[in-house]
Image (cartoon, rainbow, N blue to C red; front, side, top):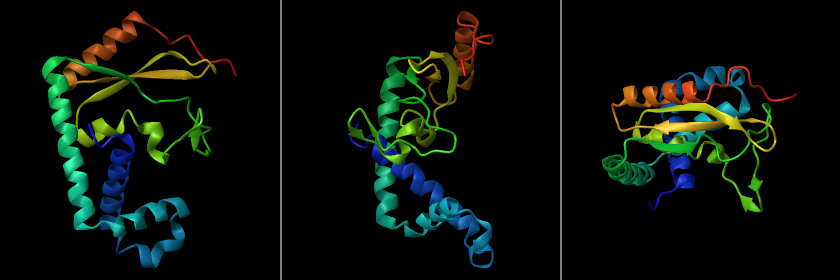
Length: 170
């Protein structure tokens, strides 16, 4: 698949920004000071959507859906990590580099964004702890309209790997 996580992350971000801009456009001039800087910057990014940018994003989304159709034509479920690295601190900042490689801002969601864009059902279950002692998630993705299959797999995993009494040491 050519349009990998950085492009899909950008597409997801612009689509959400464009939708937010459409909903909030009339409110921004009168209430701009009531919005946070980052939120406002995200909404205003939606104003930069062009027909060409939208068409390119739709082509990548179609390619993603063809890839998913191929995967789910051969497999019942797809299992991925939920996030590619340990979570950043709650107040940020997001890491910009990992093991010498530059990271896009959306990289923390590089395993979840594709299925948000393709509308495939997905669930995250706790799968253990990282070397740093932080919880690690397992994402379970299913074919479209098979939420039941994803939820059954998530339930089965949680029954096989109960975690309710396991917490990271603070």
